[in-house]
Image 1 (cartoon, rainbow, N blue to C red):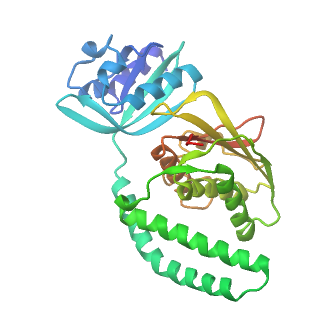
Image 2: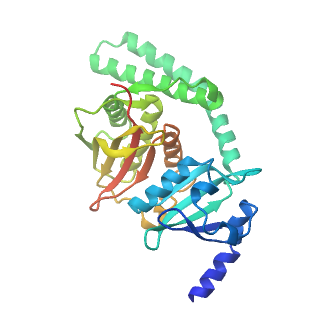
Image 3: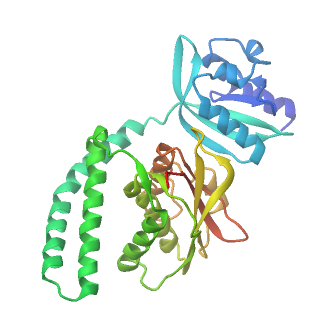
Length: 329
């Protein structure tokens, strides 16, 4: 296809497209994106992204990171449009050309409301069996004499409590407990202990923890859900060795100016197929049997904490990176 043909095709696309320079000045937009702003394409060219999206500071921050780190990102619930008519959209940012970026603007997925409703229905149905499970675990906890078996009963009871709490938040979002500082390593060790009892007794879990790691800020129960999803994915993909690494991010700030902690989950499994990576965190996307919701929910939890979750393989090893804001020591 000739360059002029490709440009003509982009002009006709219903997806909003824009090309920005390294200083986030708009170089080109197609009519679809110009329509979001109730302006013609010519009037948008030459303006800065900061002027076009003053209500979306996270967009500007991720756009700068996209250019500086040559890394694509996808943002949900971004406010774009004219001052009198703002729209909530999904924005994809991709490195483009010599230090610039390509911005794609999409309507939110129509299935979002249906997904939320389905999750609430699932949470409602989950609460009764969880109560029975908790009661049985509590009874075992009282009657068992062997310490190792009693510890398993405690683990079951505490996991039932955690799942009941998560279900309650889906049903009544306003009842979520306020975030606070917590020990990341305690969350990781608890998740490993749970997984070893559940599906991975023969897997090797290696640790490379930073002993000086400060606390993270957030909800430890929800962060445990992210880690559990990542470890389960590694085991289900066939990994025999899973490596957990923690570090303090040097020179990295998360939205809100918080310093960042980094949790890495590496494994020796086959990794994510290249064809799936661009859509890895979208709902219903899965390279194996499963709902394809785990990573989508995990990224949503990370972003709600002011952090991020990404897939960043290294030297032939599958690797997920979770960044979280630091808490108070």
